[in-house]
Image (cartoon, rainbow, N blue to C red):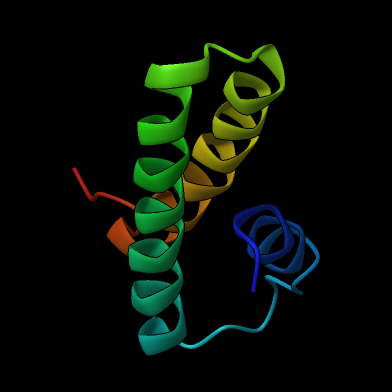
Length: 73
C-alpha cells in the first residue's frame, strides 16, 4: 500500500467510540506515518507533504488529548 493511500485511509477512519487500546495503536500508527512523510519531505521539500503532516499532527494531538484525560485539580 502506498504511503499516501495509508494516510487517506487513516484520515477517513471513524475516531469516535474508540477504546483506549485503539487510541494507543492509532497514536503510534499516525506517529509512524508522520515520520515516514518527514523523511520524504526532507529530500523533496514538497508543500503538499508538509500540509499532510500538519493534518496528521492535528489528529494525533486530538487522540493523545483524549488518552491523557481530564486533569483534576
